Image 1: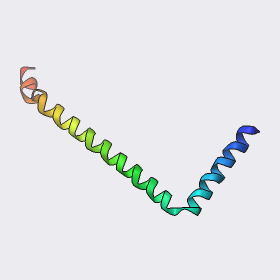
Image 2: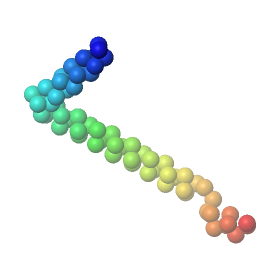
Image 3: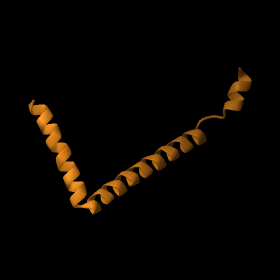
Image 4: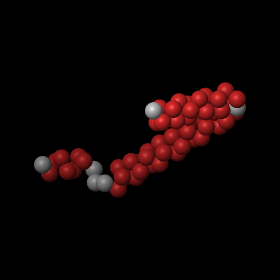
Length: 64
């Protein structure tokens, strides 16, 4: 019973804060998109550098 009541209170609190201050929700959306963009860029650069440093697959396949 207590867990259900607290979860309902948390949902009401988040809905109230978003409805009272829409600028805060926009800031949260901006931060989330920025974090996702940074992670995507880092992942792309890591994959790119791994492809540069690893030996080409064609020579490895020719050996087989």
